Structure formats: C-alpha cells, structure tokens
Image (cartoon, rainbow, N blue to C red):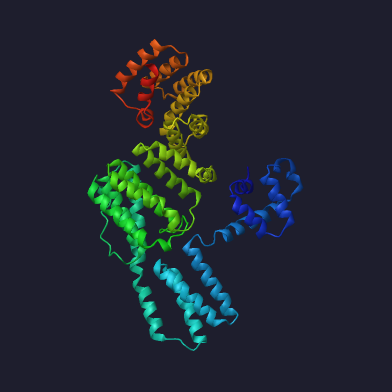
Length: 457
C-alpha cells in the first residue's frame, strides 16, 4: 500500500466529505473513489502519475484547511495572513480588528514569534491610519525583549524532560542526572505548565505521594483556568491532548495510591472535558474512555460500567484503528461486559485481540487469551474453546512464554471443557498453591481464581 492509499484509508468520513467539496477536479475525485472503494489495484493503469501526485497534494491541502483551527499556532498564522491580505487591499480598519484579536491571543499563549510579526504589521497599519504611537511600540518591543527569559525556560524544561526520560530508559536514577532549577513562575503559561510536569515526574520517581498529588492539583488548576485556550493539537504544549494525558495520568496516580474520593471527583472532571472545550480527536477520546472504564472496574461498579459502554458505543466505533491504545480500551470493555454476564458483548470486544499475532501491549497478551477462552466456555462453545486452548498452549510453548501456572490454568480449563470435574478440581488446588508464589496479570485483572472456583464446585 503506497502513501496515497494509506492516507485515504486513514481519513475520517467528515474529512472525506470535506475533500469532495474542497476539490473541483473530476479526475481527482474519480481516483479518490477508486482507492476508497478498494478497486485501485485493478484500475491502477487508468490513472497517470501526474493525477496521483495532484490528488496527494489536494488531500494534504484539504486536510490542512479542515483542521485549520485545531492549533493556536495555525490560528495565529491565519490571522496574520488575513491581516496581510486586508492591508494590501487598503482596508486598514479591518486590519486593526484582526491585529487586536491576534495580539490578545498571542499574549495569552506566550507566542512571541507571532507577536513580533503582529507588532511589525501593527506599526505599518497605524502609520497608514495616522495613529502610530512610538512610546507604545517601544513598550511592546521591551516586553518582547524581556520575554526571551520565558523562551529560555521553555527550552531548558524541554531539555530536562528529555534527559529525565532517557535516563529512565537507561536505568539511571533521573534525580542523579538533573536538578531542575527553580524558574520564575508566571513568566508564561507554557513554561509554568512544563515546570510542574517535570517536578511531578521527579516527585513520582522519588515516591513522594503528598508532593506529587499537590503538583497534579496545580496542573489541574492551570488547565481549569485556561480551558478557553485549549485546542485539539499534538503540537501545542498547552492543548486538549496534553489535558487528556494529564487527566489519565492523574487518575492512574489516584487509583494506585487509594485516593477514592479524589479519584471520583477527577473522573467527573475528565468526563466533562467534552462539554467544556472543543470536540476531541480519536486519540484523546480513547484516553478518556480508558480512564472512565478503569474507574468502573476499580470501583467494581459493573452495571454502570456496562451502561457507560452502551452510551458510548458509537464513539468507540469511530475510534477504531485510530490509536494503538484501543487495545487497552477493548480489554476494559470486555471485562465490564463479562462481569455483567453479557458474554456476547464481551466476546465482540476481545475477539480481535485474542486472534491477533501482534498485540502492541504484550503485557496484556495472556489476559486477552484467557478472557477469550473463558468467554467461549460461558457461551457453551466447548469444542471451539478446547481447540483454542490446545493451540494457545503450543503457541506459548514455542514463544517461551509458558510458565508453570499458565500450563496448569490451560489444563484446568481443558478439563472444564471436557466436563472432567474431579480433574479440574485437582488442578485448581495446584493453581492455588502456585498463586502463593506468583500472581499473574490475568488473575489480578480478570479475577480468574474466583471464576475457576465457581466452575470446579
């Protein structure tokens, strides 16, 4: 599959509709439809390389136009570009309005590179309107000159974050490598946010629970005060994407350290993000859905968790294939469905993962396999479950991932599929003895021990 096909197959329905309105080339639309319907391999010779190249450039231009307000940086570029056009047409009053809007936004997000351009254009425009004030212009430039400290802070903090992460990967204690200097807070929104993120990671590494929690609260407060500035962008440091990531990390921290009351409050905050800001992209939706489904599993509130799945089923379908984290979401959804005895739904969510040979999150591999096997037994597909378990044992043996407890669990499940009660009972006792030595992921997350105990009785 070449880059053009890959791009078309990754477009959302809204992006595809927009492209067809955006372009006026019939040949382009014909090639687009051909690739979109999967007929390109047979009709490839009908289209020239020139048409393919033109379609690719049109698609990229269309995507840029469709998502033009998702980044503050792009929004400011558009304001400057429009002001430039209006200036060329001699519409100086309209230029003044655009510049006022642009300067206000650029100051809020500390975008100094845009402020320089905006002030330069404002000077030219004010001269045309006979209202140029040299003292005001000098004050603006002095502010920009002083803002270089904030830019230095951002560069320094970016560097600190990368040193921190690379030292973790190398197995070095990050606090031995970096000692973040205390920056002057309130210099800029971005540098303040980045400073708190670095401090939060370091406190977390040092297991300072109280300090980590306080820093998370400061980050939360920073986002809450500036929700109107959030955009759905991966480039901007201060964006919906970074806010969702913060919410997800904060929820994981609260869950890990048993802050139930705070967890519930933060869960409600995360759930309301969509109503407070612009629509989320697929990746952010997935992160939010994972956090909320985690909450229901943690609280063992399976009924509400299942209702939550039903409410968001359309949204979940839209997110399919948009992020590698969809695997984690599918596991949560299958567990919530299983705990509600909705085995067909649980089967639907876990099926693509159980039959996959390339799970991105290999740590959940065994969990997927055993959830799938148990669901087959609950659906009374005993022959299928029996065959799947035999194949699974061979697969795990060949990959070197078959531990003693894995082998016992598979044998116990096979005995259940063959309705050999005495054998399954005996194997279960052996499993309980093994569980005292190690507690695999699928026993903790799935509560497989409890299910086996009910089955062998």
